[in-house]
Length: 592
Image 1: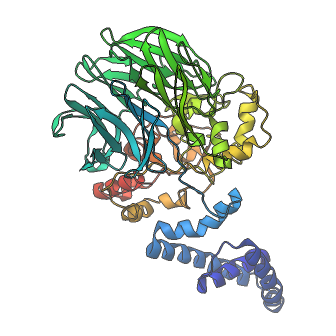
Image 2 (image 1 turned 90 degrees about the horizontal axis):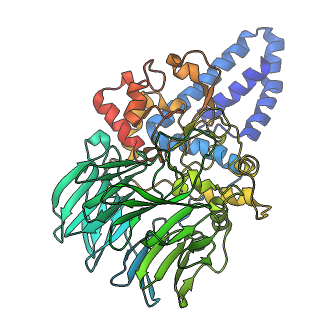
Image 3 (image 1 turned 180 degrees about the vertical axis):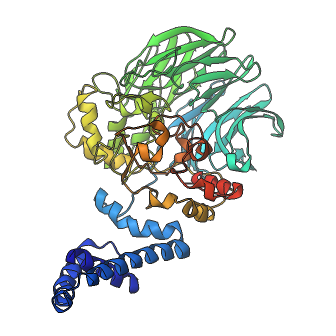
């Protein structure tokens, strides 16, 4: 009782003079001193434990006032400041090192002209290459997400909603995700803010005016768009399907297309996947069955499937019998025509005449090669720990599975996996999760590096000995910042009042919007019945990109989380919000 009073009194003093309240060493020292010098004599003098109770009440009330004043005057930024030290101590870091490394990753190409481009979203960089082996690096607008050659003009799309047609800039209300061009038409993948009534789907625009000709709505923005003789095809990650826009024909794969391209005659779609599950999503423990699919664009069905192993990403094919695949898990370019080892290989682009461009984002690498050998090669002279960690992240285990098999493009495949907890749950994104331990749905791993033991045991371990693999993986993951939100959305501060009014700050606070704690599932969701399950409080960074939501994926949108699956109003007091406040809250969540 005396210790409680002394500690509470110390907190009361801290609050009065506006000192940080989470300095454990100072608090412990002062609390001990106060217990001996103040609390002890008072007890002996008065013999009344009431004094201790008053100290406790005063101290806790001061802490409450301090917290509320901070929220009122500084909003969530103030709370982030208070908890920043706690999070840094947990990570053993002085700051949150979201650093922008040059990572040329995805590509687009015009094989007839011998041109290709590679994008580095993290560093806002564009690399232009030609068949002769020349490469030019340019700085571009923030967060380039896709590119396409439209006749002789390079078009780039950005997550901020900007579209660059050569040097001309256009702005769209939403995040741009994919591009394709064919027959004088430009297809643009876009995801708008639901709370603002913005559209999500594919815009069909004229060329070169880029005036809207039509719109195809989808529940999600496409990862990839390609053109075929029949029109355009969109690849939907959450839907695990390909959809032909004009006819609305749909091909369900069961897992998302990792990348999507076509043969030069556009007769076949070429799609690497981690498996094909026609009857529904696979629930077995990391059931990965890498394949390269050829899909006839007339029949719109798979006509050839080539078994692979080692986390395929980029793929180039001139026919169903002539193909080249980037196996990120083994650091190898493999296929029927060209083969070579290339550590960190990720994307591939066809420069024509059997010349290819390969990207290796972990090494800041570009490679142009063909039957005659290497025409151009560049990479970082010395890799830092984050880059070594990226190589480890995509390295395949003996079973052929890598972290990237499920965390597609260092994010999420939006599929369900059972990773040893006895139930399938949606794959969490790894973007923005640094310093939010404990990790995984069951909160069973204290650090990011400790997840390596999962790969070493359940997934067969690695051929390559890497003693500091756990530390390197953590070094990479802490560099994965959330994708930039579209330009024009209200700043996150505009929703802080609704966020606090709904009680969200009770669990979601700090730099990553989590209290690093667990909550009984039966308390948050009584409708689930009696259960001993504990739910880890997730970070909210990048949450707009991680649907489906909740531990079993039953909510498809953030509105469903707060309204449809919050029947007892315990997962946020949304009944305290009017419709306008709810929309402002949803907008705030969309820019974290």
